[in-house]
Image (cartoon, rainbow, N blue to C red; front, side, top):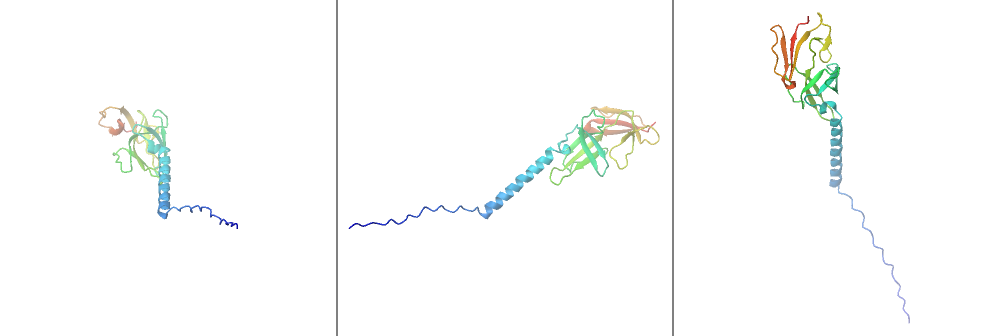
Length: 182
C-alpha cells in the first residue's frame, strides 16, 4: 500500500511590518529640521547684508531719510562716500556724541548697529539736512551751517582757532576744525 503523504503548503515567511518611528523621533526630526532652516536663513541674511559685514574703517554711502536710511558700502575714495565706520557691533553698542548711528534689525537675521563718523572735505561748507541723512555739501553762504577748515586723519586732535569747534571721532582716528561759513 502506498501512502502518499500530502505535503501541506509551507507558509511563506512573513516579512515583519516596518516599524513606525515613534512620535518622539518624528517630533525631534521636525525640530532639528526647523533649527537647520532657521540657521540657514540667518546665515543667508548675515552674509548678504552689507551692514552685518561692515568693519571698522569701511566707508559707506548712506542716503534716504533719517526714518528710512539706505546703506551701501563703497570705496573710501568714491565721490558718494559720506561716512566711515567707527564701531560695528550689536544693537547694544554705544556711540559717542558726534557719531551718527545706523541700526539694522531683521526679522530673520542679525541685528547690527554701526557708529558712523561723517566724511567732510577740507574747505567745504555743509548744511543742515533736516529729515535726511548726514550733512550735505552746500555753497558757502548764509544758508550753510558750518565750514570745515581743517581735516586731520590718523593723528591727535588738531589745535583749532578759538573761533572754531573741534569735532573729534577717536575710534575713526578722524578730527575736524569746524567754523562759521565765510
